Image 1: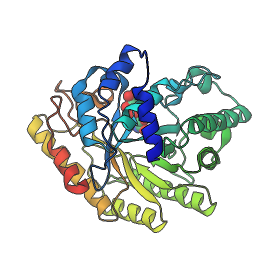
Image 2 (image 1 turned 180 degrees about the horizontal axis):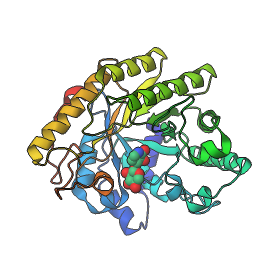
Image 3 (image 1 turned 90 degrees about the horizontal axis):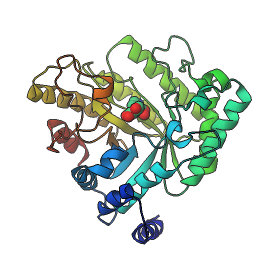
Image 4 (image 1 turned 45 degrees about the vertical axis):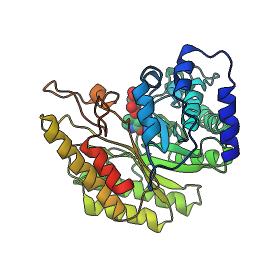
Length: 356
Ligand code: XIL
């Protein structure tokens, strides 16, 4: 791995003509040695446009993160504009930026109900669905073999309100292939890169309420059945899109304890605070958000240290939250650890408290 790191870096250094966007990203490549900055690795999701245009953004990522993941770029919609074309350009640039700054890059995500291009949404039979899913995993994991060491193989497989077993989400993959798509995907990923850590990732299991409890149970049921069938699986990701909902601390600790007892890793993959229903005044809102993150991380750390904590973005300047959860009072959302001026917020202090 370190050897690869060096050769990749000299490759970047040796690139001749690069497009403007590539140049901006290159300037941020501080050539730092890959040193771990945290005792529990911290990371963030990145966006291409911002990485190109905003030097403070690049500097903050480089200063704080052990890991990067991308919001897009490795989703089907970006990677496969047509059935037979795989476009790795965006993913390759994120990976190069991460590696040049001594960070690792995790892959998000191979199999998801969302971000499918129209040609994939239109797949109407089991044979083609299975063939395309496997071809996708083989090609993408194969392309990054030995360079992306950690993959969200299956994302959001569990239904939002699972009433009966197995409680999987109604998705193209479930409709066309059936419940075995999860195991098929994990097996294909393990074959394409036997060295990669394979994660299944989900959300909405950490809150108080019956719906969340049912989702937690369905997620555990899926994980247990994969283990019983000897399906390659190394860890469980919890996204952690928190909100005004209270955290079920006992329920979350019990869940993580179950994961630990199975010998699996547990990681927080997309932490942020969806603050559209939280109090308006920014200082107060930041305190409520930090308290929520404290309850969340506290419940997890009470069971075990996660293998990483990643936030879904790093600055309030760039986040999916204002796009999907705009506030009714017109005040800007404040979902992430740094504000729009790159000043650390109380949420960052909480992350420091647990992860430094
Ligand atoms: C979101 C991105 O942040 C947006 O930019 C995009 O438009 C839609 O997807 N759970 C996930 C992520 O697993 O992939 C989602 O990311 C946020 C919710």
